[in-house]
Image (cartoon, rainbow over all chains, first blue to last red; front, side, top):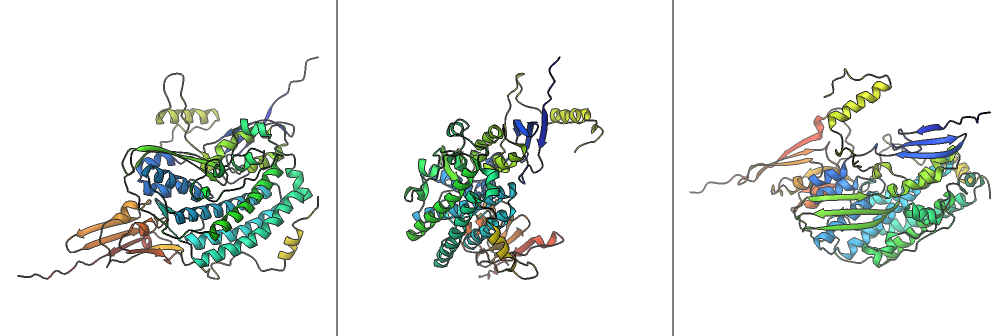
Length: 404
Length: 128
């Protein structure tokens, strides 16, 4: 008797909003309901920002780079501004550094609360989703009153910040933090005790400490697996030098640990903001930076809400950078999703994906493929021919269409 | 382990007003620093063009018609503006203000989104 032939069944998820409202494609091979293999395809939201920076001045790039991510926009601006300030050899006033830290931590609070809602929604817990987003509005209102914008605050300028904090702002922040702290205690209790939600998170997507290190996980995803990886501690920058952070880690590595770590990080952010506001240095909020940046290279790392954010800036002595390279945290964590999904139920895949707090338009970068035949890419015409052939095979003939 | 941890929040919300704002039926209070469309003061402008040079969205054009008579024309493309406020930051004369500007900017046509302002030429008295 011949052995029964087994066929692999692949479920395509995406590219139209797979779990989250951003494009990416996942090919999940399943055996029944159990995932046997997962392949991720990124690049649907590539915008060519790195190339665009090479035709804009440093001042203009500050706002362009801020738009890489809508959630963690301030930290992108901070990383770029601090990198350029390092190249220019400029010392930023302490008050500006403190304000940068406060806005960065407020941003971390709203990012983590947004993620809490998204994570809960993926788990089918929409009550938690709606209430956590309602409370997130408290932070959004604070950021709006400080900077004038809800997102893309444009708080940074080269050499400091645009806005000062008034006594009214400080009062509002402290009042809002008291309210948020009370609510955060409640949410921590919900995600660690609610039986129906724990069935979706406890023991799901468990990443061991060794796996986290091998897969290169960063940010809260790595910290939930017990890996102490936090740029604010490893290489303190700006006001973090004077105001150290206590890192929250968890050894369990599952989705529950990721919820717990991110919510506990909120308490740390509240503490840090209070500490800095208590001891807000007086003085100027900006210093002058020359338009032409001296020739050189600078690499700058900061801790974004999702993990380490890396900026490389190369200057050729003009007012336009010759190269800006950005590495966002999601790309480092994406491999963990592919590995962790194997062996789980198909229904758990959206939760595992949401567990790393992905941001797809952040991580889409150009990939250059070196071909064996010597050519390093396709021409526009070759690409078009490939497209026509591809669709012909799928019995759609686009050949008679004239493009352009 | 418990069930229905959010039950108290949900049932309590039944007796509260909606948290969302009823905009535009009820006008929304905006913070003082909210950035709206740019307001240009032609009297203090020196026509240096730093605002136009630093604008990341190419929303400002400054044209010097007559440098001696300090005759400038400013074109502001509101539909390109990202309201980042860099122009206000770059202006050394304080001729630009964005805080408290108009922010309800919806329109059915593109015409209202280009504002052209002009600084009238100085009248120089001829002396013999």
